[in-house]
Image (cartoon, rainbow, N blue to C red):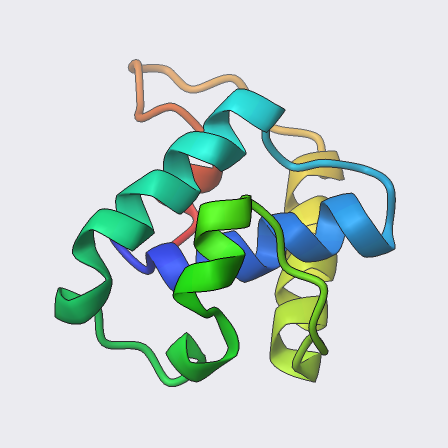
Length: 99
């Protein structure tokens, strides 16, 4: 999985601060479990913000970096733009492909 810490922080910010989730509760719990299982192998400059205790609880109530807030705003803006119909099938447009 690419950038799970960034995804976790973005999804937590959207859920807890904006009350407008990016993913379902089940997906968020699965993301927390994935990060917890792979915590020691994940490298990310915001990793220090997400503790194993946060992941075990399936929550994050810390401070959100401006970069995370901006990423959520950009993600929402991308999702609102009208899309041209592709001539050929393309990849799904989802949070997975945002990173």
